[in-house]
Length: 225
Image 1: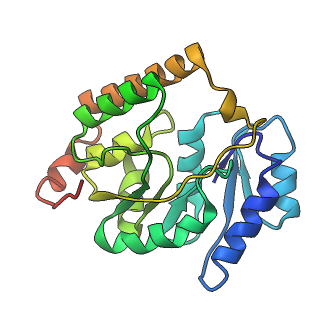
Image 2: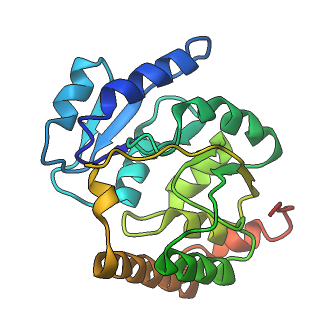
Image 3: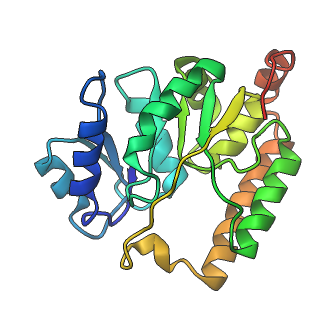
């Protein structure tokens, strides 16, 4: 779970995850991405394993740090703001029987920025589902391939698309962020700047030779959209 100034939601998040996963072998791993509040301290008080970045590196970098250091092979990436409900984790993990990556399904984005960005990503990587996002479950094989080539500056769904990992979507009912959650305040020019930065990284990945060997290796593997 990437964390940035989420101290308020962590107690509920961890309690709900532990209840949901109580009969399953599991580990809760939080990556504090340079929070300015006491997110890391709160997580440790809750008995959760915590990794910390020395500065804010971005959500994709935090997720990649978690995937690199997770002690269990199969992973589920979940936001810490409760917008993606913890109760969805078992269904997403079980859906890995049909694919290497299971994205949580999102409604059609309300903001023009998001619609343009997602359309562009899909045009560059047509094997991805319609609304890939940063809440997903990934198999052991998929995780190994992802962390072998991904960099902190990459948009991770684009790397998944570049690798042509078989990917599907799992429909979940989304929650809502608290009114004072930092992500809820991402507006206007900030949205466009973030989208432009991620789209630039996605285009550079598509033009680079970094994942081409992996692309060739997986070109004959079936994909599900």
